[in-house]
Structure formats: structure tokens, C-alpha cells
Length: 86
Image 1 (cartoon, rainbow, N blue to C red):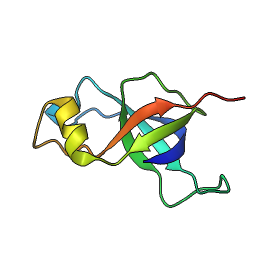
Image 2: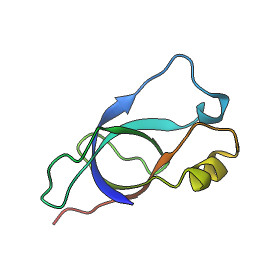
Image 3: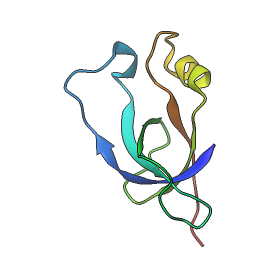
């Protein structure tokens, strides 16, 4: 699991059938100092995160495929939590 910040939404006119009803977010993983860590990833979201939110993301592909109900889905990243700000 990684902490990341939502950079925005991804829209697609054509996508895998397992992702049709899912919101897709572009999430930039953060390092310990709060800076960018690698390239942004595409994550499915069922929690309602939006641009600028800090989120907890998981790269458990098997769990993500179980979530969408398709063992052949290309999904890998999921938003598993939205972080509260102090």
C-alpha cells in the first residue's frame, strides 16, 4: 500500500468490460517526504475520492480483480482509503 494524491479523473470511451461502472483516478504516489515517487498510476475508486485528496492505494491485483468480479480484468490499483487532513 502507498500514500498518494489524486491528480484527476481518467475518462475513456472504450474500456475493458470489467471497468465499465468504475470511476478511474490518476494517483501520484508519494514518498516519505511527501514528494512524487515514480509515475502516476490508474486506480479504480469506489469511495468517492476527488482531485487533491490524499488516498491510500493498493497494488493487490488479485484483490482488485475480485472487487470488479472478473479474473481477466487488467485492473491492478485500487483506492482503499481517503486520508483525513488535520
